[in-house]
Image 1: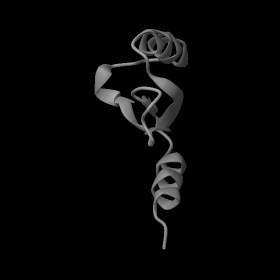
Image 2: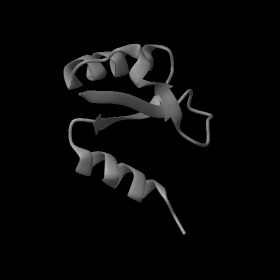
Image 3: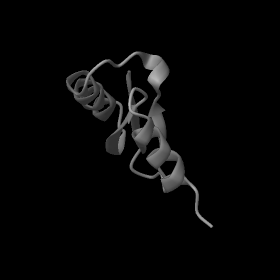
Length: 71
C-alpha cells in the first residue's frame, strides 16, 4: 500500500513547508497527486512536492524513519 503526501507552502509568503494533503485524503496514484497539486496551485499554494511512502516495502518505511532522525 502506498501513501501519497503532498508537502508545500500554503502561500508565497510562507517560510516553511507543511503537509498540505495527507494520506487520509485517499490519493491512490501519482497522477491523482499531480492533479491535486494543480488544484492547490489555484488556491495559491507553492513549492509543492509529493512524498510516496510504500508501506508494503519495509525497507522504504525504515529509510523514512532513519532519514527523519537527526542527531
